[in-house]
Length: 148
Image (cartoon, rainbow, N blue to C red; front, side, top):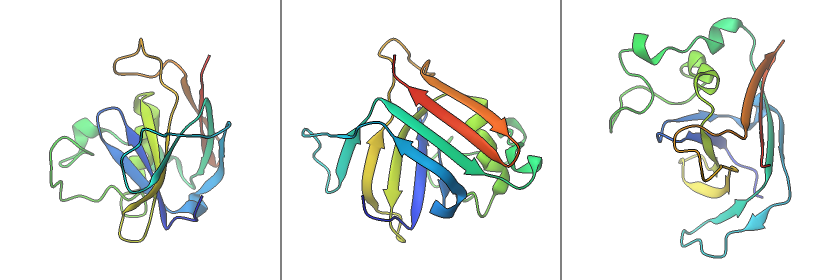
């Protein structure tokens, strides 16, 4: 895959957070299978496993509470607040709230998709992904999604 300017993590409710690639200490996938039914201008892949380590420097970066934010992620169109973690460090904590990561987008400097990976999701789960676990370690958040 092409080296992106940013990586966007997209959640079930269409919220997302955008990070620079250097925040990813680890971004690994199981075998990638190209989505042959994809009708977008970029390549899209399926996988059975995702392992992500995202760095953080201070626990305050993980203290995201949508109920306490004037403009939480998503919620409505044209949200005036950025979904870039560099602008709002605490939104990294969105990963800890709900296990509902659905897609990983590689995006360019204009935030156009270069390619994407569809995260494994159980057909029986409507809002949360039973395959997903999130843990915090000193200095990084680990996200693991493994089918089966």
